[in-house]
Image (cartoon, rainbow, N blue to C red; front, side, top):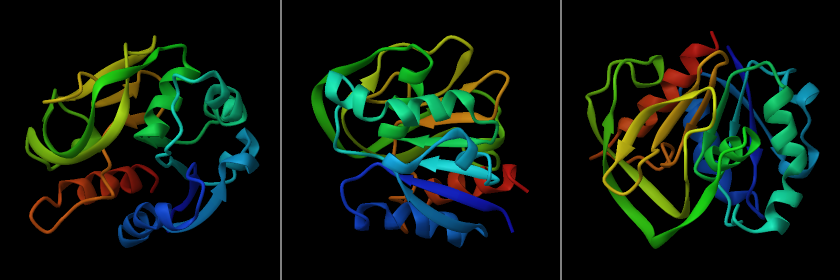
Length: 195
């Protein structure tokens, strides 16, 4: 059973329980760690890492400073990492890409188009319905990454590093529903990469 570290970027624990539960439900053992405790060596003691969302805004200098240690851990670790929403933005920032304030706050189920083949989207249709809940987006693909999906509201809905198993998704796959279960399958596909 793969061991997954969930990095909690929220100010409280309960906001991260959906992500933990989805990872556990897909056959992994989960340990949660607060963002302030992370390091590359701690990341590397697990089979994979998931970075949660956060209410913090990456466009603010205080946020970039607050999460500098986590940014460095993303760069230096050797394990597969899945960045969710804020985690996706943090990954993009770590690799030098801009994060920008969007014109509007998006909090809705959004049509998302998968652009080609990748293990993260294996056995899923090319058109998905996934929940986005954000004020900010990644403004440009980081160097060394490729675009995996775009949505009706987000140009960079999913991305992957070319040489390392690093994934960022702007949507919240853990907030799936009975009507729209695709997010849970995406998390399952990430867990499968760790076996």
